[in-house]
Length: 129
Image 1 (cartoon, helix red, strand yellow):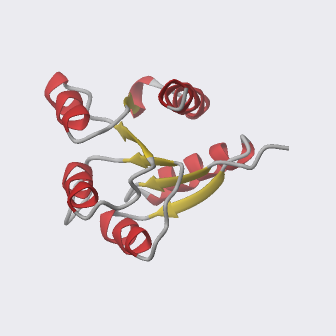
Image 2 (tube, rainbow, N blue to C red):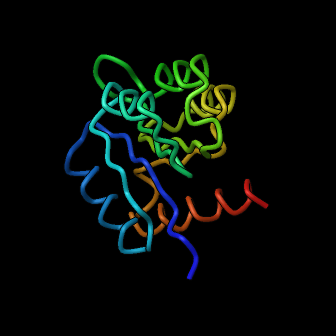
């Protein structure tokens, strides 16, 4: 049996965090939920290096783009595949995500939770070929 992939889901919306955590764990992932950027940063600074990081953009205090800047600057979780999961899907947002090192961008509103899991699997497979 292959080892399950660790996925860190960063979202300040606890309902969405729980829902995506459930969907990914049902699909065989080891889920590390983070209820915002500060929580995610403290886990990463303690040495956590998930296979995949799913990052929301719109969060209080520090948004997902700022979080990615700090992760890059501090060279945290360098082997992680970073994927943006946001309701903001404007081309400028997607471009910013790509510039900061996101391997993919999924718009929450245009994908069911099951589709999000599939898209994340597809992005991860494409990156780790």
